[in-house]
Image (cartoon, rainbow, N blue to C red; front, top):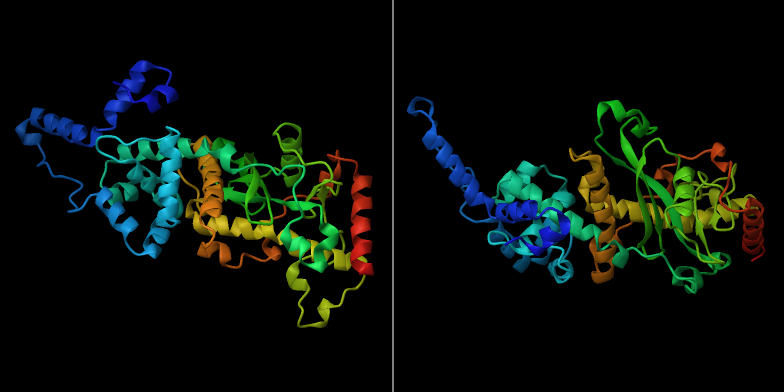
Length: 401
C-alpha cells in the first residue's frame, strides 16, 4: 500500500509504491547485500561487516537532545525543543511528512535541520543518524519539499492598513519615515553549477552564487523572497522582475527603504548619492556626527533604519551554515534549500521570541553587498519624480526638526 504522501508527490502509482517500500530500506539493503555476497565465489568474497555499529540509534540521540538541556537542541537543530515540536506538528498536521516503520517524523525533521544548520555532507548525516546515505537523502528531500509548502503561511506581504512600526513611532528621529514598512536588499549565496553554465552565476567577488532578493520588516521577518537569480544579475533587475512578474506588491502610500543600487521611487526610497551613507562614517564619538547638510542627515537616518535587512541576512546565515557554502545538490534543490531557510527563520521568529541569535547585533551596513549601479536607473518601476519629491519632503522634515 503506497504512502499517501508519495501518492501526491509522484504521478505514477508504481513509483509511489516503490518509494513506500524504500522507506524501510535499511534492513532491505543489508539483506540484499548479504544475498549478493553469498552468491559470489568464495575466493572473491569479502567478509561482511556492518557499517552503522554505534550502540544508540539516531532516534535515541534525537530524544536525548530534545529532553536534555535547552542549549543542546539550539546547538544541534538551531531552535528550541518547543519550536522543534511545533514545526514537526505543523508539517505532520498538513500531511507534508509522516512517520515510517523505521523512522519517525521527528527524526526526519532532525536530519534536515541538522543538515542545513551545520552545512554537513550526506555521509556525516548518515553517520550521525545511523541510516544509509540513500535513506538520509530521501527523507532530507521529503522534509525540504514539505517546508517549502509552508511558504504562504509564513512569508506574507504586509496589508495596506499596516500600522506605523513602533521603532519609527516611538523615536522622533525616524518620524518622517512613518510610511516605511521595511527594507529591501539582495544577498549572494554560494552555489554549485555545471562548468559550462558558470559564467552568468559568477558574482563580482569571483565565486558562483545566486542573487536572492528579500523584503524585510522592522521586526526581522521576511515579507517577500525571490531566489534563483544568477550571481551576475543586478539588484535592480531582480526587483523589477519581482514587481512585474513575481507577485511583489507595495501597498498604496507605503514604501520600502533600499540602498543606492536601486532607483529612487515613491515605493522604493534610496539614499542620496555623493553623500556619506555607511553607519561607521557617522561615529558619535567624533566630529563626524555633525551633519554637513540636510542630505547628510537624511542618509544617516535612512541607513539606521535600512540596516535591519543586513541584520536579518546576518542572522539567517549565522543560523543556517549551509547558506555559506556551495552544496553539491542540483541548482533547483539549492534554491529550495535557501527558501526553506527563510521559512524556518520566520517560523522561529513567530514561535520563539527569546531566541539568542535574534538578540545578537547583526552586521553593520558597511558590509552590504551592492550589485547595482547607475545603469540600473534606466526603466524605473515608478515615476522617479514622485520619489524625488517624497525624499525631499522627508529630508526637510528631518532638518527642520
